[in-house]
Length: 401
Image (cartoon, rainbow, N blue to C red; front, side, top):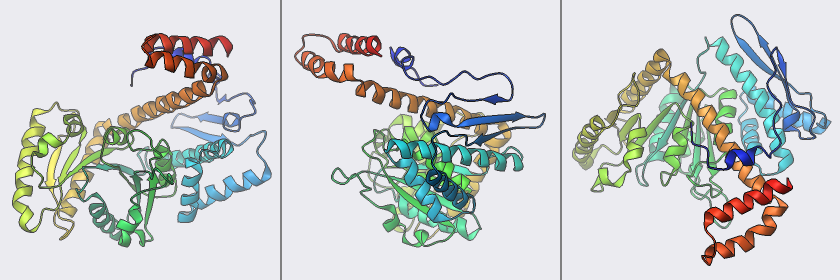
């Protein structure tokens, strides 16, 4: 579990709190006037399973809003791509009311997905794969080749491509649909480029919600492609079942150019562009990474990371790569590590959202907004320490909340 910053819990205690979970079969929140916190959940417990189904007892949900949520939900569970696109747009919005509607929709989709998992023997209905690598590694080309192979095998594939944001428009800068032309026309595939909106790490805060929506819409393989710079690899590893690192076969000092921590996170390393004159360099890189991985601490009891070579140009190695991915999934399910990993990811996701929302609530507080500019000036002039300024701001917040 991630560490909690000093003073953070004190700040959280000043925020509106959820009601305590009650013993028995029902729990919920009091009517606070907030749509998301007015969603009541009923949990029915039996000897075989636990089913959580949201009852939409929302005090201030208008008929029009009910119609919007119902339309999106019905479209999602019947695998309409337009409904999926609209639903992801809804969870990406910054509009307060629409964000609340998005949470209502997500609760219904989560309940539906849980029903699907129970019907599937309490096993995940989708395989989440994170793909990252340095620029020029051929990530988009590789995804298109892999995606076409999977749809030909009757899989339904969704690609969540987290793009850098334009500083001018805030939209996706690279536009993965334009780089995956064949896959974007495949009716069994769904590609969604999501701008990072200047989020540190390159993975949007709503990527997790988008994964849930894709799974609810019947996509059994979810590929998450990241920018491949900064902290994006660490962020995507906390939301997928398998983290795959893609590297090109040439460039010099390859092992020096990629952080050790990223290599340690990789469940599979893929050397791309292994064709033509690059076959020999690709084999050399494969050998180097195989040796390097043997020196790193083993993070799983059921799986040892492998290094494979593929060619998106010729398709060589792609089938074997998918079989290796399936072997990883099978090993994780058999050992229980995959389900444990998902549970831990849910906890990390919750704390990330708490941190983000608590910080926003703190920054928007009137006492903080009035005091902050003066304290920032004193810190920059060296009159007070950053720690003292932070304590004064927290005191101003807690004393007037």
